[in-house]
Image 1 (cartoon, rainbow, N blue to C red):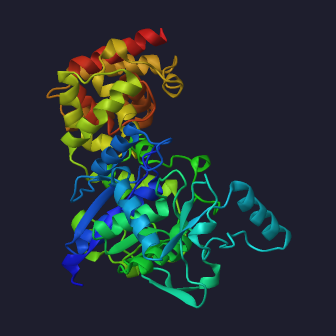
Image 2 (image 1 turned 180 degrees about the horizontal axis):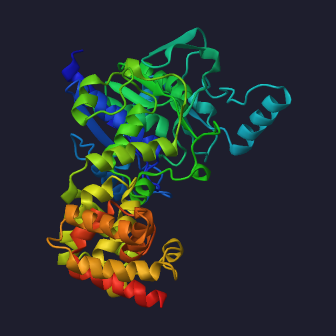
Image 3 (image 1 turned 180 degrees about the vertical axis):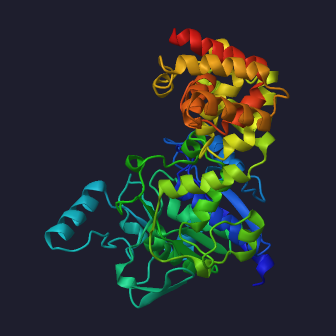
Length: 474
């Protein structure tokens, strides 16, 4: 097989939100396919019709789009392929590779109870494996079971886990067609992977045991087994499987929390894979460097603080106009605020200072508000109020007069004017001047470079905000 022959797949079930662990699986499949200049395919595993959700299918597509994981097919529906699965099951019976089993639910429960009482693992006792057709009870709809090997060992040379061996005696004659005529997942996934030409199955190591059972079907049909790579699961900080109790766990949640897609991609790439000490990867670098040999065998722990740090890095690197487009929905939904023409001009001028202080788009939205409102809409936070006290009033009154006389109204001139005022009225302590000014202009006690913000807001707006603060104190 050449690199170009590689075909990977991502087969999500459309039953809800897209878990971040599934996103990492999709990423690794995508990266390996692109690294090999092969194909990355999508299959929607929608055979569970009770839990199937059309909206969840769209969520999957939107999540992949947000992560920039393009695919090379129109996503296939496993449910739509069910007749093909049924035909394969019936053909296996015809060829002696599978058989009809007429056990009742009560009989199966009895087998489980006996196994439990004897300290054995519960399994079907194969009582219908070699019985003649004439023994079939009337009026009972059978299931179809595959004939698993009874002796010897099965081996998988996994790209991540290495050589894995099991005794065939532990393999059961699994059901491939239910009594109602519907195919099971275990059969459907094999038939679909074969028909789609999948060469590499890259998935979580919670599927490892199923792989041996599925290979029974591959071998019975005489089909080539794919190359396997079973990825360790993602755990929380406590070592337990990542779940809602640890925090956000779906792609949509991280998007809603204001993370950039490239940050999530970079973090997921490093979550169980590495290339030396390199921390950040462009998409092109990731495609060039990614290989399955670099995947760790042990479970990775999801570190929300680390993700936030990575996101802060990409926020600083992001294009300013793009950030404005991305932050607009957070301003609208979180603060009921639409960016006006003058607000846009201020954001464009102040974005360098804003993004250096923001770890997420949610923070960026909060940090941006003072640029987007006029003086009459400035609201003072509790921290801002602490600096708008009786002592601050004469400082602000003096600053108001000083600001009116600064010309040209530029960063350097503003800084010089504030320092001169501090020397004359605050014993040279610039902080005594700047903190009341910051609270007056922003409503709080933190902001980007204040001299830069003053220049961006402009003389008239700055004076109006100082005047409002003075009245608020009075």
